[in-house]
Length: 568
Image (cartoon, rainbow, N blue to C red; front, side, top):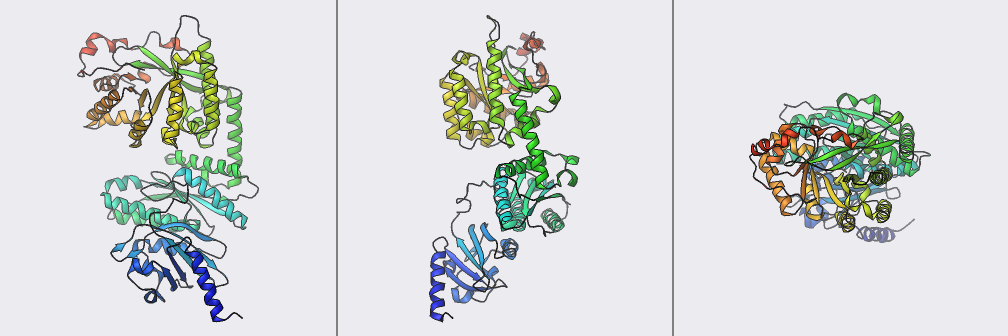
């Protein structure tokens, strides 16, 4: 039997190893009382290590995080651990900045729980996972990665988990109606609570404004989550809002499922959930086991690969028109599907391809088809066309290399072919994206940045990415039309682009009022149903409809005196 001296030596060694990562170490008994404390705990809390012994660990945890901490430590067994949970301590002058917490039980040491804490805002820096700033939860893409890792890890231990998707209709609307401080508290509280219910406290994500996901143990009472979050919303609104929290739970049986198939199944499921609206979200249409969802995803992936390989789609053209001269400058190439896929939403196909990593092959096929179409045009007919490149594809090195190789074989197309980068929010590395863009531009191919103005990050993109054109998101134009300051915003945006020598296109211009508005604001080009729906035949736009909107009288009626930059 080891002596007290031997036990002390082992304890000292254990503490020394802990400090290789931790700034604070705690040992907790079965009631979560502190039986050992070391490191910087006294400097932060103002209490000596001796004063903390025998007291509840919640004495050193910020009150707002008591529930989160207790939920997490209560779920730890000798088969799992606490991994990278962020919470605040109760410092001398109030709650501290977030600290990173890890921990596990040691069976041979009375099955006590050992906690390591790392000071400073280090949370997430040991991980590539990205977080939603409001809730502190993983974003949709990182949630897929974390869920995949955790499901595989627990499966290896013989434990199958569940994933619950939660739709909290009106949550974001409620937060927007509150002051900044109250809104921040509501969102962070919801995030902290969801993290506390997830396995290990690190597998909860925010899928969209009002949609969330958690990976958890099978014995979790989901109805309790619904009632608790409803109560949070009621408290935040002073009892005025009764939040409706819908849930769907599915089994995460990952046995005999490859990592790739599991990732695709998760991405497919979460994408279904993210895009579901109203009645589309039901317990029935999402409550399946993962094996069934993986099979469904595999079938869709196989079908999409066949669509691309067999070219079961064609190009439909939509014109981009000058706001002052009414002339077609170029056409955007849009995909439309044929055969058994005819009539199906191109948007759904493209989103599916993006979420499952298939979009680079599709983008390459579209570029090849556009080049083929240009090469087939009769002499004397000169067209300009733009093909889309997803932000996902820009980050795919194989796609980039293949596209550059294709363009070098077709240098003649530089004066006719343009590229439009869509889903710019998916650009992982702006500097690398800019290298790709400048490579295209140096070869003579002009580049447009789509979805501009839809979010604050658009201006960061414009400051980092040197492009020839920006296309204003349809929602940004609609909001400008409705908002009292909308005209000023759009005029300022147009002025900024002119200063940068970047042309502007407003999309989804479907009526004369929209055309007049963006023309008044100095936007150079428009695209929309006002001039026709996409068609596989460019002759459908000759002559261009509504030529009267560009008559001398129509132009003289415009209030704008801004010059329009015509460089594209």
